[in-house]
Amino acid sequence: MHIESERSAKRLVRLKVNGRWREDAVGQNELLVDYLREVARLTGVKTGCDGGECGACTVLIDGEAVPSCMVLAVRCEGRAVETVEGLLSQGRPSRLQQAFHEKLGAQCGFCTPGMIMAAEALLRRNPNPTDGEIRTALSGNLCRCTGYVKIVESVKTAAEMPS
Image (cartoon, rainbow, N blue to C red; front, top):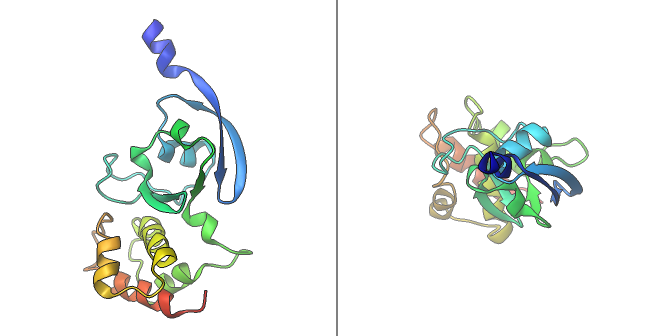
């Protein structure tokens, strides 16, 4: 009984999600991916492998690309979390979102939010990456539909767009 009550215990957590502070009751063992999808209702974050290997759940935590299936939501107390939905500006797609659309970087779309978030982290720290740097930045993200050529082209196109 005691162990079960510890697992289900919740605590109030304050974090900044897509630029807005939130305060929610979060289970001690609740993964960030589950918090974002079920509590914050940000379904662009996808649940894929649940083991940090596919990248579908990639978000930015304080600007760093992280698989949200590997982070407890309570560990994000006071931190900034960004999802693909947060890249929209006044309802308009970001340059990466636009480039993925124009250059056909998205096939089925399941991996796309994670790819975009990993690419966003790259472009913030390196606005003019080489193909190799793009491939390295995306190496934690798997796509079952493409050979990654269109994805790399999409990131290169976004890098060439004015920010």
